[in-house]
Length: 286
Ligand SMILES: C[S@@+](CC[C@H](N)C(=O)[O-])C[C@H]1O[C@@H](n2cnc3c(N)ncnc32)[C@H](O)[C@@H]1O
Image (cartoon, rainbow, N blue to C red; front, top):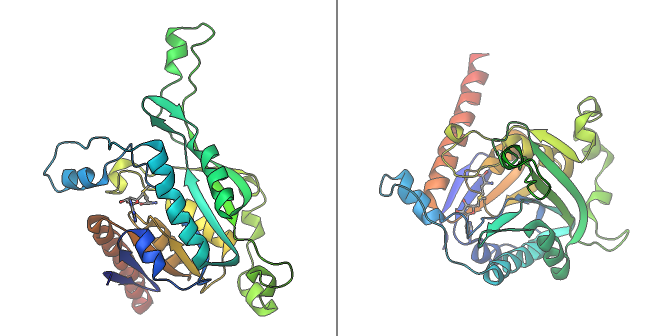
């Protein structure tokens, strides 16, 4: 019913994630990581027309905040069904401009997630080490109280968990010692900056990816290392250019991406397959 594109240990499925999620079994997924579309800010249909040379620029889409809330709530509720008890749902999200006003979407989002049954666990700040936002310039021009607009150099990474019955069905409590040993985290890497809830990671430069708003593979990489074991299934319900699929493939996880736009899927599949082919070539060359 849905077109599927296989890549290494995983796949990307084309479709609306709400409909695709309905076809997945209950408790199938261990970890979800995604960044949702800002439907008012980016019209992805028009962005695709731009990359196909049919349009100069894309416009904003007309959608109310309530409609947008419903869009997210429907999809994250269905996600809750397919994630295993104790499994994590990690979401990269940031405040957005809605009708010209800076809207605290991340804070509303946390309460929407709690309402549908996700348990809030962590708030991590992703500090974009080379962000280009210049809002703070306003204060330089008007050095008076009331003109403070800090440059926006951070986004949120929220961690939610599917509630589990104590000592009964939390998957993380039932890993064998052998499995744990095989997935031991290298602590030399996690004692400095990574041990804190401010992660400093360089954002993706526009020329590095055709997608208008990819997150860095390193962000997906950290989330996957910290919240899943090898061979677990990791899902990204708004997969875009496949950064989660790529990080999961590198980390030997199984992975499912869901994305509505075929152009982004083609790009993701081509890129990940090229990396896999390169690895195979390297193996033969050794
Ligand atoms: C913020 S972007 C994700 C970018 C991705 N994290 C990456 O690194 O490339 C959101 C994506 O959701 C996709 N999208 C929008 N509505 C969707 C839906 N109903 N189902 C699945 N994907 C959808 C958009 O096409 C867009 O690629």
